[in-house]
Length: 213
Length: 213
DNA sequence: CCCTCATTCATACGTTCGTTTGAATCAGAC
DNA sequence: GTCTGATTCAAACGAACGTATGAATGAGGG
Image (cartoon, rainbow over all chains, first blue to last red):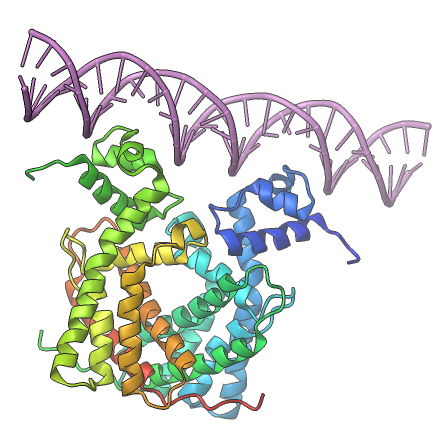
């Protein structure tokens, strides 16, 4: 608690409130009040509410992307053809892992991701950057090697399913314990293993045969 | 076009706008304007914006629940132990099927469901009724018979995963073609088959072994 | 001390929101 | 025609919102 940096406290408060109440449901006043800052602080430090959201999302996504990329690096260092289950774990695992700022087993982070992903406003959804695209493409390539014969479109579909299940599950966990500060660790670890099982089987399914049409 | 019933037109307009812009992103003024009604019509016919949402969701969910239940009935009439793939299709299929009011292959409906499901406000999420619970429990029982040895909690996890993947995929389809009025039929049918493949494999995975802890 | 610059502060502006109100309108029964 | 009940209408209310403004504040260098 050395530096009560206003800018950081605004990011912390906004991350928490955006995750809990959504973008539209969070007022700048609520953010500044929680941060112990003045109402005008958001305008001064970030310019606008939308840019504050951008900063929050960027800060949250960066370590996840790094962890996904590092996990894939570790796998590829061992073998050029990792197993599907390992790829799933490397992709989905970071969403379950603990985040620095006392996140509850990644649940709050995922709640934020779902809140943002589910928001229909383009202003809210336009945050994916080149870093995310790079990691995603690397996983796509690895999965394509592990699942020969799977059309690229279906692979796309499946990878999105993996992200969806992971984020949604974690979000629900958070939703049910928004104020409870001790994470349901056992349930969280179980969910992680369930998710890996569920998603590995899903990814490993044989390609769908083309229909009559 | 016989009856320009104001109440129905309000429901239609609200369903469209809630799906497209979310609950908070849709103003009562936008709804009444689209419905060609007066601003006060929502208050008169529904009482409040929240009750309007409730009416919309109830109207959307009812045929889906009925179709899921009927599909399960058809399966159980044939055999007491349907295959997992058939159960998955009966559960997820109705979300892909065409809805009466020119829905685009169920995509708009799913967009609405995701928008509502993803909204952190309890006011928005409190819509599941006894009908939904009944259908869900029936599918849980059928899946439990088809997947012996799977703990109830993990079965719960998996069924939610099925709903999540289905709704989220459909929502994305709608999101990418919100104004385009002709549905991407081929892609939609492909997505339906992909989803069945993906989810059947996921549901059929062997139970996760308990970890050391 | 004084000047400077970054930050914080109280305050206000203009807009949009959900809701309410009371009069106007209309159809059908008598 | 007239009364009645349901519906629609224009208008307004108070609250909450994002943003902008200009003065206060405080630390560091000259």
